[in-house]
Each structure stands twice: as structure tokens, then as C-alpha cells.
Length: 135
Image 1 (cartoon, rainbow, N blue to C red):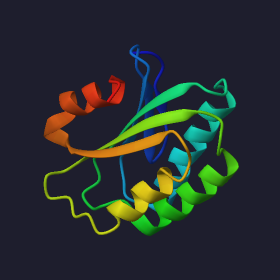
Image 2: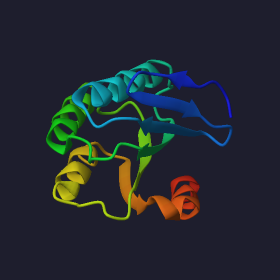
Image 3: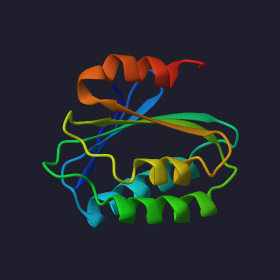
Image 4: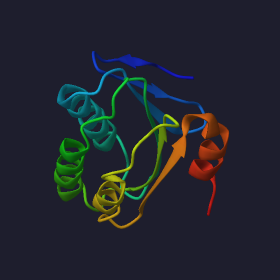
């Protein structure tokens, strides 16, 4: 593992295999803003056309603010539409409720080349295989 960014609400860890891992330590708008600030920093330092691999998980006891995440994702995609392609995995607790999942996936996949999947936290190895795979 390389450097770790310790945010107040969202931790960032780049891994040697090319995966950028984000861990939400709380469920708040501030955590979402911190995550998108990290994505913005990565975007500034990424060559156009690069494939990015994001692993996102939360240790918060309640779900992240989905509507705010969707709004933020739409804004971020509009600003970064054709910079790179990405595969994104969200690891979630087994009791995760999916009320906004389809909207969130549609929001991310509005940009060509972005694929999103959700896996329960106990399926991390499978999620990493998908992230780094060609399927």
C-alpha cells in the first residue's frame, strides 16, 4: 500500500495494484464532499484515457446520504465527462437497503466508460476481482 490520506470523514488509500480505496467513517454531506474532493485531486493528476479503479466502503452505522451523493455525482460527471474511464465498487453491509441504487448507478454511468457494482462487504475479494478484471 502507498500513502494514506486521512481525512476527517473519508479516508483515502491508494494500493499497489492500482485500486484507490475510500472509506467513509461517517454518513454525512461533509464525508461525501471530502470524497469528491479526493476524486477531484486524482482527476487533476490522471492522464486522459486512464482506467481508474475505485473501491468505496463505509464504516458508518447508517447509509450515506444517497440523494446528496447522486447530486454530487451528476455535478462531478458534468465537470469530468471524458477524462478517464473507471470501475467503481461499493462495498456495503449485509443489511444495506437499495432505495437509490439504480439512480446512483445511472448517475455514474451517464459518463461513457464508467461501470459501477455493489457487493456486500464479505465479498471483498470477488469485488476486487471484478474491479481489476475485463468483464
